[in-house]
Length: 453
Image (cartoon, rainbow, N blue to C red; front, side, top):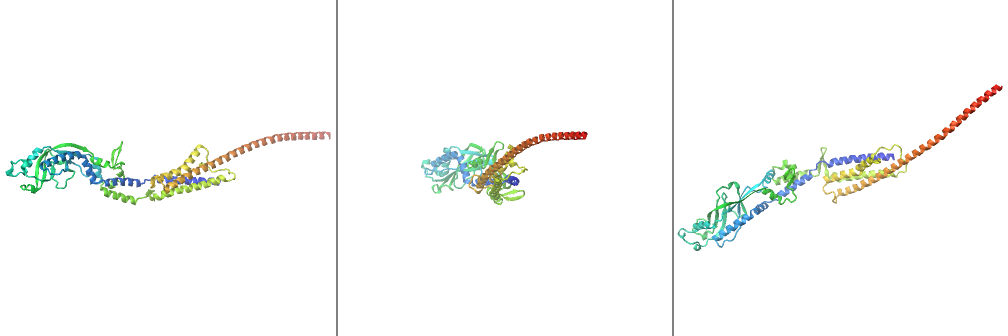
């Protein structure tokens, strides 16, 4: 059995070395999760469209737009009762711009800061505008005609030009942005009315300009761009808040920020995807590039092989009928005190299983509890480790029982020797005494014989 104990000690040491190596490998940095999180951020940014941005800004000014449209439609119907109701764009004095038409660093700076929107509305002065209209459309010799007797004038379009704004000759939009630097103290603007030239032959052209005044409305200073991105960031990928650092913008891009900060979203995503493919499944260990995927698949099976090998030795050693020789090697696996049992429990079943689970959890592709080859190997290893510890406990009990029997035998033998040794010593004393007496008697008789002679 001594040879088996020596073999078990060597297997245990190999198991410790392999477990330590696997743990060290498991704790090496794995950048695959970082690439995945960064790619999620860039994909979410890339999915945001200009239409979505315009919808968001339009919602902000919807009440203002409805009020201005109602006023302009009322004016248009006074000028032409057949004019169809329209929705007119409002003008916003703002520094708003589509946030994603920049590099990543520019986007980050833009969404960190507030944006300003100054609402402006038309002054309600329909009578004054009607007077301007009359003066513009009536012929010189018909200036005294009442408006009811004027010929019907057909309006084909109407547009409000704010102070400092420019007339846009394109289709009507929901809102028009004017640089906030164009806002002046002079709030005089125009209303451009496009008419059918055949209905007003005396006009030179088809546009009539009516001067009007504007009034300042609500002024908004908010992180509008950030609020737009947050509405689709349900999982808090783009923004993260913490008590220590406050608001973090694009935190998942921080590991790669120096590489991609100057790039637009599309180019940054292409670069990271290329790097990810180049380093897929690779981990740098001691200056070498190791295939993490293969290591994850093989390692649990290596542990299973070592544990089965150890179980076979333990069972063979336990089933031997021969006596346990003296001088059993010192091995912690057969120590019977609580420290020996604790160290054995931690190093025989726990350490290999823990090292394998950490390795699969950090470098594996799937979950620990998914139906995969790695999960099956971990379940088998867990069973074998428990079986190994149970078999080792049985071997320890046999060795302890044998040592106890040996101690009892030694005690009994010592007691027997004590009894045996004590009895011959008294007999020897009597014999010595008898022999001494006989010699004296012999001497005396000899002496007596000599005297007689």
